[in-house]
Length: 95
Image 1 (cartoon, helix red, strand yellow):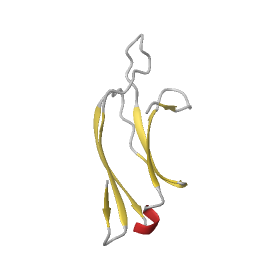
Image 2 (cartoon, one colour; image 1 turned 135 degrees about the vertical axis):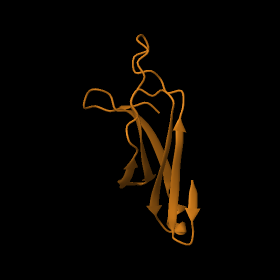
Image 3 (cartoon, helix red, strand yellow; image 1 turned 90 degrees about the vertical axis):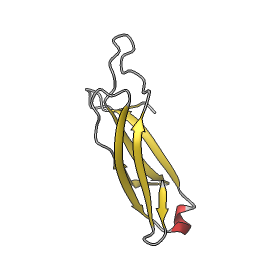
């Protein structure tokens, strides 16, 4: 996480996820993880990584930018959530 004060941008670089739980512990099926990034309390502006197939641990290397003033940034909370894309329409929160 880095704040560029000259351009008023919060830069978030996701590097990796590691040791995610199995989708099915009995069959050792790894999840299909993706991450959502929000700057709370605003839930309208969010980013999402691509889906990583069958990855309990994986390198991500994706960067996202939130244009925001430093004064406003001090009142915000960065939320990272890891979901399993899965086979159904419901996405499961896993971290």
